[in-house]
Length: 79
Image (tube, rainbow, N blue to C red):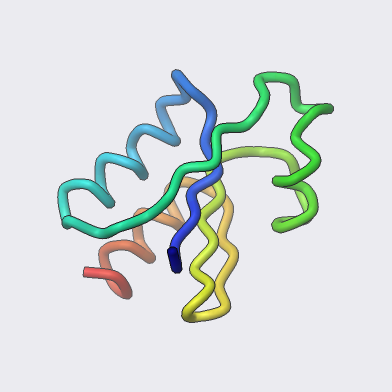
């Protein structure tokens, strides 16, 4: 899978990104993260920070945090 979305269950920002990907029929995998910031080591490893959502686009070599930036990226680059 070329797209990985690091997400937290119940996070409205994560849900907005997931909805945008789903609405456009874009295939992606979701990596569910721990609710505790201190336990999000995988997110920190890939993005340098522990906040979610984070989208990793391996095909384009892009790792992107912040839901607004991700939504723009989905609209402009992935649609």
